[in-house]
Amino acid sequence: MKFPVELILLALVPVFLLFVAWELFRLRRQGRLSVYDWRDSACCAALGLLHQGADKLAWVFVLPLYGWIYQQHRLFDFADSYLSFFLLFLGQDFLYYWFHRVSHRVRWLWAAHSVHHSSTRMNFTTAFRQSLMYPLAGMWAFWLPLAWLGFPPQQVVAVVLLNLAFQFFVHTQIVPKLGWLEYVFNTPSIHRTHHAKNPRYIDHNYAGVLVVWDRLFGTFVEERDSDPCEYGTVKPVSSFNPLWVSVVEWRDMLVEAWRADNWRDRLVSLFGPPEAAEEVAARQRLRVEAPRQVA
Ligand SMILES: [Zn+2]
Ligand SMILES: [Zn+2]
Image 1 (cartoon, rainbow, N blue to C red):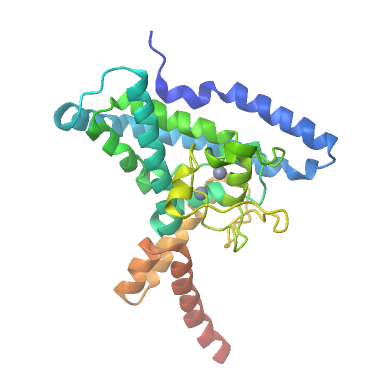
Image 2 (cartoon, rainbow, N blue to C red):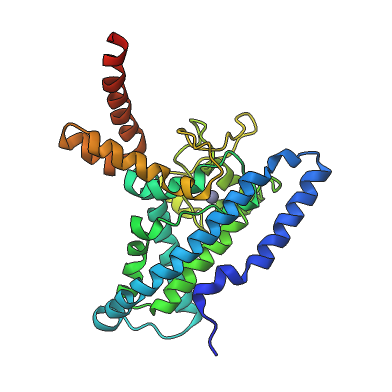
């Protein structure tokens, strides 16, 4: 029987938990156990399970579309070889970089991706913090070009999940910079800055596996001891309820788009960069509060 590739991440849970135990052990020896908060980690774990459920459901609907594009419209026929798997990995990691970059710059996708960033903690359990809303946001559309190029849908799913599995290992504060690896791969140091809201770091280091995309497209920033990472989002989400954390940014987005008094603001609320959408929201708050103050 063939291993169902959709279950790769769930199958790796024992490995992930071993690394969580190792991290806890190291932190305890360093007297830094406060890096963990059990409520935060429980919320992350619940979000991870919700995301896995939504993801499996989404593949049921999306795989036939991938299959149709692959069967009817593929450009090339790749033989089953290490070279074609390497090309698939490279192509998916490149697309992941753009998916991730767009997820930070377009509110519609940020509504889903912000869940991953809404913790003020950074440890291995932060990696479990994923959004169940990704299928609605349209994450699956970013991998469609791979099926169109001629990679079998099952292989595409496998590579998408292996990329995510790799990223588990970069969510930690106990691993320092890793020498020459920093030039090639996404590392804990590189990903720590990605989760930081410090002005120097915000909206940089979108890498999945390879950091070369950030270096190539001008979004790389190096972690500095003089500027320690402050984790979390500019607009804080102070809740450990996984369902609330999953939907709060969608609610804000839809309410602000509904309240907008012109189409430009409405479009910015839905598809603008998060900081531009926040300006629209701030103006709306002023409009609501000003009459109250007069009264
Ligand atoms: Zn991100
Ligand atoms: Zn992350």
